[in-house]
Each structure stands twice: as structure tokens, then as C-alpha cells.
Image (cartoon, rainbow, N blue to C red; front, side):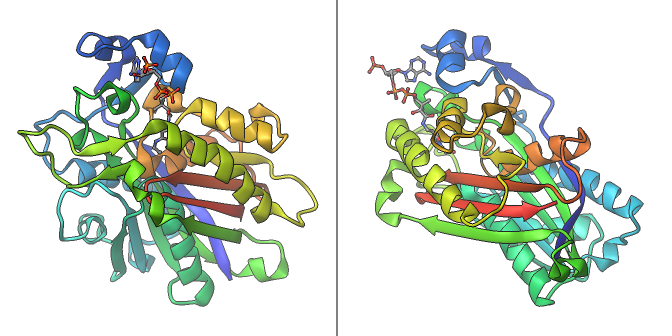
Length: 324
Ligand code: UT7
């Protein structure tokens, strides 16, 4: 018994910040950002807005739930809520607990999971394992991050990279998986290398007004880690498959990373959809936002096998082979 996606949703705040707007407050340019990253703009919450993470998660979840309800699911049938986030509004209560209440879900197990850019993959794997074991029947899984909380607008090497957003999906146990037909996680691998944690870190959840943002990153080692390790992990994940996956839904951190991964896998770049141009890196939200766009755009059909893969702080990485 495995997990079928019966609803997806995503949300980014209204305010758009273009590369040119950033270039007016720091020493950078639209040309540099586009050629080095593929990013054209990002969305940020207004600084004054309260409960930014919860708001983004709620909006994305409402959309996913609306679709699941059209397929006959009732909110009280959802018995698991996992929010992947490294930028919660509160140290506690967990974002997932607030979501369950405001969405009238449950009674449900609800908890947050923090693994930065790999967070959504960890949450998706966990929810699938709960469904596969029979502990839960229906799950809401959210990837949400509000990176504008951390950004130091004086640090051009990180400020240009990130955006705010959320993606959500509703998973329902699919008993047909055991017959080799239904939807679910075929394989999942999560890894980490804590000895390299220092190259991408954030010491405090909350911005220190005197010292600026707390996000620190050495971009080059993270870039090299992703380009080297992600293709290796995907090859391991797909070993023994008769056919190559239909699509690769990768964490949107840098378009050049995705191009390098495609090349190392000897796969055409059009199997690697992307939206980094519009949203930048929304951390735990990149994969579910992209998944939502693909599902709603009709790019994925029942039976398609896809790879999702993410990487980032930890250093951590993960890959899931999933049948839609
Ligand atoms: O989700 C996981 C989190 N993070 C990532 O995945 C990030 C992975 N890393 C990257 O995407 C890339 O390393 C970056 C986009 C962050 C940087 O690109 P790069 O090609 O690795 O550039 P670099 O750090 O080697 O810097 C090249 C030059 C430097 O100038 P000098 O020393 O050559 O004179 C930087 O100071 O570019 C300069 N630079 C900039 N110039 C204009 C760095 N940031 C900027 C900027 N605008 N925003």
C-alpha cells in the first residue's frame, strides 16, 4: 500500500523583486544573476506581514485540499500533516500543528521537519513510509520557506539567490501499488555529510538587527557538491530500471547545476523542467511548487515515473523515484 498524489497546490507572495531592483541596492546586475543562476525575479513577503510561513503554507495547502476534496476526500480523513521548513514563524508550536487547526484537519499527527533544501524530500519520504506501513491513510505534506527572513541585503552572494514560497500535496494510500500498478515511492535515498555543514549555515532562526542576516554560504563548494553528488545518487536510485524516468524534478537552486546534472546523466535538458527564473530558490518549496505546476499543466499522467531530487544545507541530499 503506497501513496497517490490526489491534490497539489502552491503559493508565492504577491510582491515581485526583479534583478534590476536588487541591482539598485547592491553591487550586482541582471546579467550576472541570469547568467550565473538562471534567476530573473523572486517573490518576497512584505517585512511587516506577520506569520509569513504559516500564511504561505495555508494558501498552498488550501489549493491542494480543494483538489483532493473534489476527488472525494474529507478533511477529517487526513491523519498526518508534515511541514518541511527551516524558517518557521515560531520555535514552537510547530507550523504543522497550526495548519491542522486552521484547515480543520484531523484529528491528525502533525509535526515539522527541518532539512533546508532537502526538507521536502525528507517529508515526502516520511509521509510515504507512514502510509505504506498503515500508520496513516491520508497525509498533507507541505514544503514552505520564507527566506527573506534571513537574507542580508548587504551580502550580494546570497541575497540574490532566494525567494519565499510554499508547495503542498495531499497523499492518499493506494492499495494497488502492491500489484505493481498504483502510485507511490518506488525507491528513496536520503544522505548527509555533516562534516561539511559549515559551508551553508544559519546560526539563528531570527534576524539579528545589529549584525544583519544570519545566512552564510560558500557558494562554490555547494555548487560542486551538487554537481558531483546528485547525478551519482540518481544513478544509484535508478539502477536496474527498464526505462529512464519521464522527468527529473530537481531542487531549483541554480539552472547551471541542473544543466550539469543533465549532462552527467546523459539525459536531454528538456526532461528537467524548471521555474527558477520566476521564483529563485525557495528552499523546501522548490520541488512541490514545480510539481504543482507540472500536475496542473498536464505534463504528468498516471503511471509516469519521475525522479525528484534535492540538496543543500547539512550538507544533505536526497532522491525519490516516484510513480504518479
Ligand atoms: O539550495 C542550496 C543552496 N545554495 C546553492 O545551491 C548555491 C550553489 N552555488 C551557486 O549557485 C553559485 O556558486 C553562486 C551563484 C552562489 C555563485 O556563482 P559562482 O559562479 O560560483 O561565482 P563565485 O562565487 O565563484 O564568484 C565569482 C565572482 C566573484 O568575484 P571575483 O572574486 O571573481 O572578483 C564574486 O565576488 O562573482 C562575484 N559575485 C557577484 N558579482 C555580481 C558574487 N555574487 C555576485 C553578484 N553579483 N550577486
